[in-house]
Amino acid sequence: MKQSEKLKKAGIEPISERELERQYSDMLDDIYGELTIAGHQYSTSYALLRVDPTAFDVGFSDWLSAECDYRLIEIDGDYYERDIVYGFDLSEEE
Image: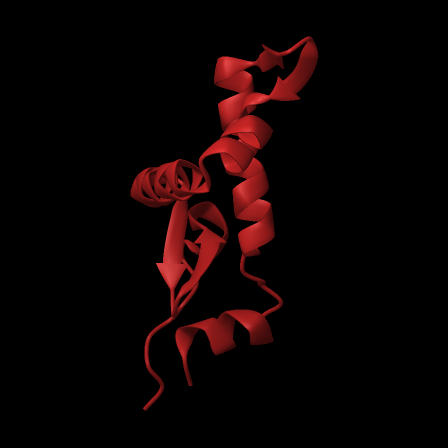
């Protein structure tokens, strides 16, 4: 049984990519605030995503990698909060 299947069976769901992108956007907006373009206000994350989606994606990837160093853990291609799965037995069954 895959590790992610064991977690799901225990009621532990991965964090959705949409939620991870929201967290990244929140981080950008907290740090850089809002922008004014031609008299209109935009969040930094929205502006970056619309103006340079590649830069947004690269930044997201870098942020996700950094989050995996201390807060998240990748298991079978999905991301989980490290403190939730810490101590959970994910060893292979015999």
